[in-house]
Amino acid sequence: MEEHHQGTCTDTERSPSWTINHLPGEVLLEMFDSYRQGVDPYDHQWRKKHVWIILTRVCRKWRALVFASASRLDLGVTVGPQKPDHIKTILSSPLPIFIEYKCSYRKMTHSAHWRVRAALGHHDRVRAIAFEGTRANFYKCGNEAKIPDTFLRGPDQSVLHLRRLKLHEVSLTSTSGFLLSTTALTELSLRIDTAFGSSAETSLLACLQGMPCLGHLDLSILSNPLLPPSWPTPKDIVPLSKLIYFRYVGYSIFLDALVAGLSAPSLLDVQIDYHVKISPRFVHLSRFINDIEEHYHAAHVSFKELFLSLLTQSEYISHCNPRFKLGSTSSRSTKSIIQMSGALSTMLTSVEELRVTFDDHARNSMYKIPWRMFLQQFPNLKALRTEGTKNYRIARSLLQNHEEPVDDPTFLPSLEEIKIDKVDESRCGLELAAFQRFVSARQQAGRPVKLLFGP
Image 1 (tube, rainbow, N blue to C red):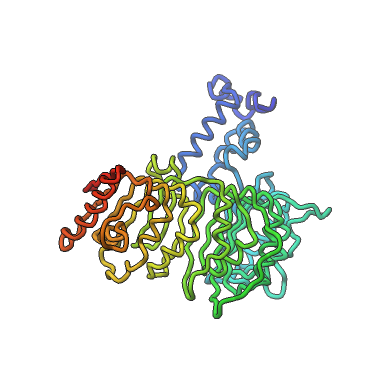
Image 2 (tube, rainbow, N blue to C red; image 1 turned 90 degrees about the vertical axis):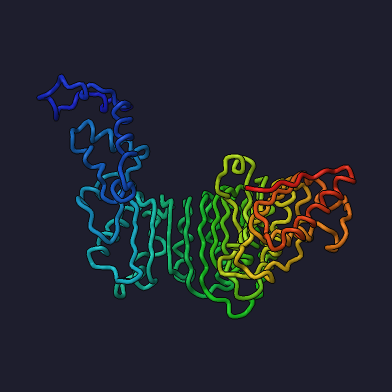
């Protein structure tokens, strides 16, 4: 703690005997941090309403301590469409600046425009920009360009300190030059609503190549592919060694073209929701995912949402939500599960627990997929669990050619347990018979498998 933080505050000389005037700075800081954590709603009150200013008005000692501990106390100046109290005082402080503006349905007012311009004048303090709105509202105010491509560079053209950037409803054509100057980014969120072709892909890869510290990438490409694009595979792979979070929403063709030029081996969180207009394309996605160094213990296939999720052993034991999720909320074709599992085939080889959730309200024809081929992608599977009343689809697949039980040593060689949570009463006899024949065949071969029922 700096020396000037320890002195008795002259603002409270009338009460020098108060214990609080003699508390060490570190103790006061613990009290301030406890107060911060109790603020609710946090983002609105602490970051946007700047309620922490109350602490700076008690005395000079508190004020100095608060401003000297900006990082620990999560202090910052949020500039947006609404005028905050004490805007001039806030902007004149040394604190980081966060620009947050949403104007999807209205134009930027002159006063809001002034505040954004004033904030951008403090280049070395701008840490985050979040914008949601039309390109015209963001980049133009009349005929005046609001944010030049190089606004993040100081007078000496050195790159400054922007850490987080969120741009929604934008085009790469109008933002690529600006993105090239955001070399210190750790978090990037882009929602691209215009045509995305090979030139846009190349432009985005060039921007990402200049972001060596990027750890969080949230990307939505919402343009509509009229025809299947044919793009050359990038010659060079852009390594994003610090990327641990990747989220994508959009068509699989755009995703596949993009990851063809990316490598992110440190990924921990992967959330992919691809749209379907033409047949899903996962040519390069397999390589991108196989580069991930994480190992997965369990998998969950849901036909209610058409998602395939993977969990690490610690996530599985702790009953955590999966941090790896691949699927399509817009597709109703169960064939997508086969295509997704093919893209994840290398990752599935380490899976020991598989849970399959059926949609009881779906037509039976939805589940006419090559189940045996699907299950063969889990060579180390030890436990298979089914949920829903469509279990007979898997039950039949356990029998070679859906006929007599044959002990194939290459099919689920490590399987030890099958658990059925729910049985379709109308098919109970056939369903149980199929499972029992498989279990009996394994028993005779000296590789017993337990058959369990219930949740």
